[in-house]
Length: 132
Image 1 (cartoon, one colour):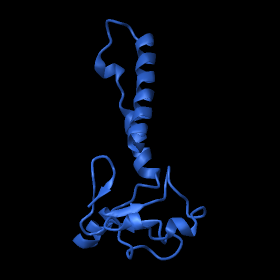
Image 2 (cartoon, one colour):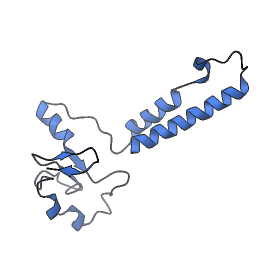
Image 3 (cartoon, one colour):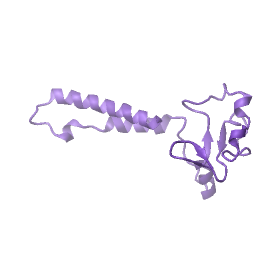
Image 4 (spheres, helix red, strand yellow):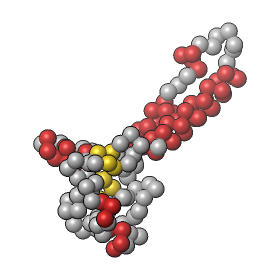
């Protein structure tokens, strides 16, 4: 959803540029190459992956660390919690985590309980729900 919103912003910027160019250029000389400039869309995507809290460089020290990094879950970021506002109830293990999230694998320090990992047989379905 977040990347979709960023692409929508980039496409609306590109649309504005195309409309502006259509009004200023001669009708007979207009070609798609002169009208369309993809830089706003590319800039929006680069901005998302460069500045978002949810975007990280993947840990690729070995295949196991890469797999662990891909199975990591986070309650932080846009639309989520912040480290300062998260209380003890949010950080505790809940009964609904059974079979879905590993209760042991969580970092120490301010992120404890806010970043976790999928359990062994859990996966995220196409709708974004964790199932076993």
